[in-house]
Length: 141
Image (cartoon, rainbow, N blue to C red; front, side, top):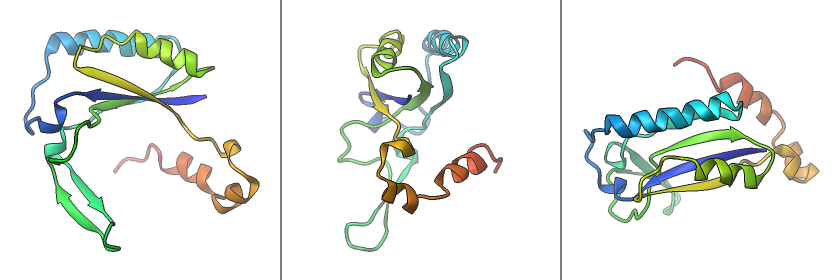
């Protein structure tokens, strides 16, 4: 079972584009990342730049509208993620509980949808999806 562990650092929604990371926190997080890797559950991980460097494309009017960050209405934003492959939701929670997160961070755990989770009709409509995942996931840009 694949799960995304989404890091939500409270206050990151207003972080400046040049936000600096604390080397001690990075060291602690690297030890955690290495533990995930050594346990054989880590698939991928990345940190994200703050929303002040991002953009949102909304479609409420029926046409795409681009809004540059920061996003004043945002209360929580992602700071990064881990993709892990574990046996159960409980195991994913156990890994999240081991994270050296600070008191202003939350980890949201979401199971990744698998094709087997869907009806035959949906699987047919998404035919080729798994090949797209494999073919484009790691190509250099």
